[in-house]
Image (cartoon, rainbow, N blue to C red; front, side):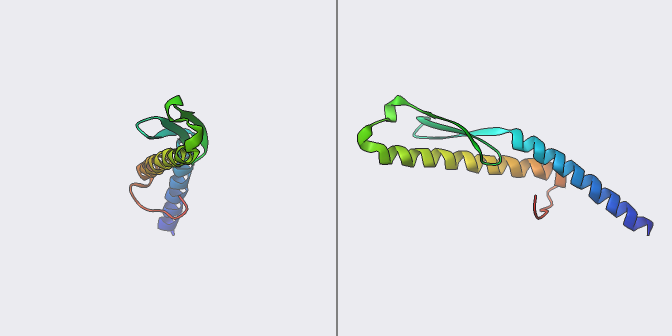
Length: 102
């Protein structure tokens, strides 16, 4: 019975650490870019877009479809980086274990 209490205490401690780390990671931001930095998107590790910068060099009214594709590419680049950074940060707490929901 004592072992069970220790396991529960450890689980609660891990859960608390994970929640703290999750909050810390959610505040961090990453940048993604496309077209050699002509489009730069900044997002949180949760995927919330914070800003977008578009170089005047890529703005052409006749090529809006290209610009739209570049924005999508920059966002996807940032999202990929955010996911990797978030996962890496959570592994610090879990010791590499994959815990569903985190």
